[in-house]
Image (cartoon, rainbow, N blue to C red; front, side, top):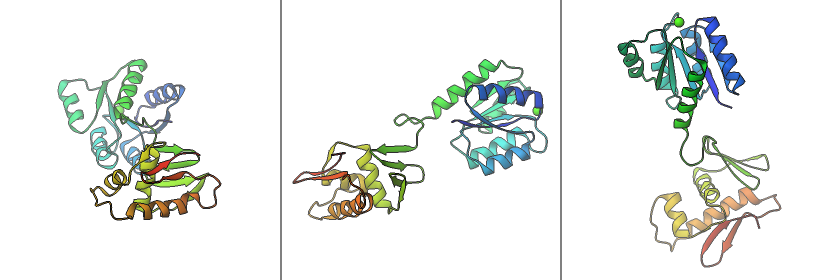
Length: 227
Ligand code: CA
């Protein structure tokens, strides 16, 4: 669920926005002044910020600068009663991604939020930060792995190798290809480094499970598949 932080001191406006967004399946946290907004921002990770410009204690502009530093990936939409070109330019220079002048129609706010969220999504895997294969699940943000709901401790190279296998599931991968992708080098393939790491990985993800997932194709390389 998309998580939004809304900082707005006019209660009527904030409850109207919160209610509308929740009806569209967004989760919304509201703060009524700049410092409360800063606190929310420091404690939670958000997908998007909606900031009123004129706020008690800390301005929307200053808050926007803080968001840019702490949560650089989250788009910021500024709401403001100030509609001059200079006001907009100031907001955008503080790092805002969009600027909406009050009063506005809820439909327009919604359309702009949707546009910002679309822009934010990476082109390949969509918004998800999980990769799945069979009962394996990787979290590509914190680089952790689990199988059948059980956490598996992996070293950085083992994780990189497993991610490569899952992104190329059911494809035969040569040792040369694996070396280049995981170690970033074109190796002399006389070394058995890949075999050694594949064995480490097999020990961790297959021990205690019925199904083998990483298969050797003799003379060619390895393949991740279900049978
Ligand atoms: Ca205000």
